[in-house]
Image (tube, rainbow, N blue to C red; front, side, top):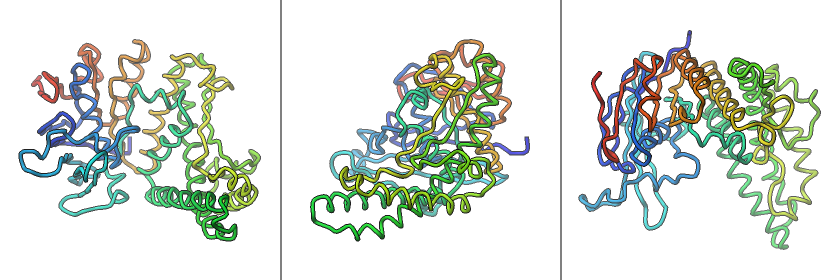
Length: 404
């Protein structure tokens, strides 16, 4: 394959969850980590995702990652540090995330460095691209639309810094507009004050929608092909970006087909967003929220023409997730020219033997560096994982690499 893999060569943790100190070398092919639940397997995945995306997992606060007793010996506020040494495109980088509690409760501050230079999140995300797969990812199929929007946001933020910038600003603009909508409903502000915020939401939201629609079509094509390889007799897997913009399929076709690049597509979408926001203004004021835009969109997943969320078996749903994750690898590789690290967090026990074999074969063929965790050592004793380092958790937070 033309795209070379991105690799983490060393992971260092300090006061991160239940790890007081860890200095973990990782081989080019990756590492297998075995241990009971609650011993710290997923913490390694969390640390790598934090380095990759600068954000904690869904539903986890940054403050939750900080060791409870950290800082006591030094007389400082509780803190945590994660440092990773990355190889990419024949060059190296050292990425560091430092977390510190600020005051009481769940407040914390975050500092990012590449080398010895402080950086913003937008400068860090994408240096170490990853694709993560855990049992929680079943929520991609059966969960709320917000889970699927986050899936697209994480993927796109790793390959398109403009997307990350537009998405962040869009969130702030919608929050301002929603506050104004409530003030208008209460008689404290006038409608003409909406004009500025409408323009901002339109321009920023159009870029987000266009980028998502184009990416979704690319991922959908790969996922459909991969699903046929995994489950040839289960039916066709269809993934479609579902927007609050009520436009005919023919209107979307130039965008979804990739005929337009993102900026040109965003110009086309902005006209529809502007019109939709104008039509929805009365409802928006009555409800106090912006009802049109990418924050209300979804990714529809169908199997044999029917929503897999409602009609798919649990096995079919899991296979759809496998196909989506493998498609995610292909998408990131095509956009960045490098292959992301693949993080498999205790997913092997979720699949039957046949589909576990197919996943591991696909993972090996992807040429990605692999980080695989399991409670069952037998599941990672597999020929496709033979080149990976092997580590065990003898006790919570006590990781030991075994020489083979």
